[in-house]
Amino acid sequence: MNSAVISRNIVTLKPTGEINAANASAFKQQLQTAVESLQDEILLVDMAEVNFLDSAGLMALVTTLRLAQNLNRQMVLCGISPSIMILFELTQLDRVFELFEDCEAFYASL
Image 1 (tube, rainbow, N blue to C red):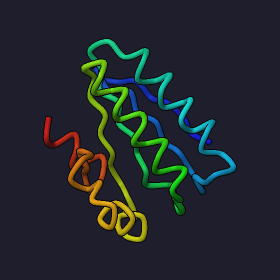
Image 2: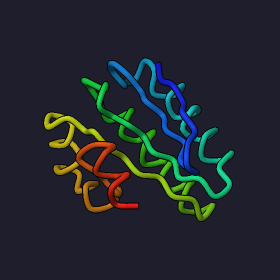
Image 3: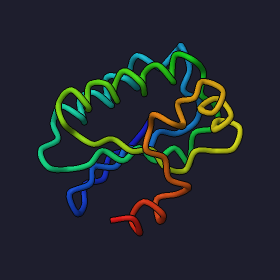
Image 4: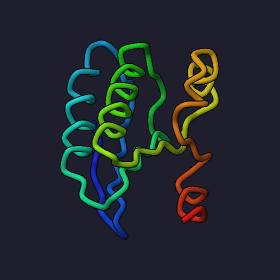
């Protein structure tokens, strides 16, 4: 479903395909495990390969963001497709998450 890459104090998860009710629980578990294992690293979720996200997938992201905030950790998203970005905008979560157009934009911000 996704892979993890650790470099320069950044842990990157790269989910692929659809994130929906069928696999959102496993996705949330992977995200939360990554957040809990962070020390000084940033969790970067590269959504470039995700072509569908439903409310269950969105809730996995929101729940993990809350966990990250409670643990004083940083979680950012990049590479969100325009069709998925509409979901973030409709729910006003584009104001809650730290979003970057792509990973290059994120790395340029460091």
